[in-house]
Image 1: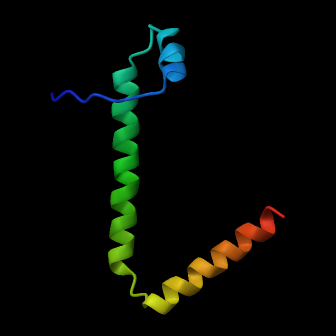
Image 2: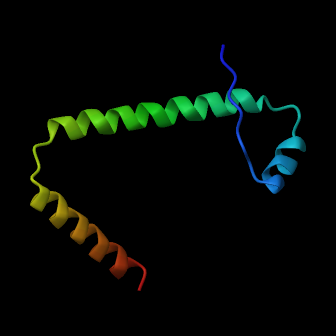
Length: 72
């Protein structure tokens, strides 16, 4: 198995250290795996969608508008 070094804020490191019973490397591995599966699914969906650049721009504008309305 390969090692990976992560940088975390000092306060997060302190909080993690307060729970030595947890296998944080396993938590991180599971989170990486889940995120990677989500990303790969998104890529698969995107490859199947035939949107034009105009379609993508219209969808983006609609999302931005809806978000602005939600937070007003």
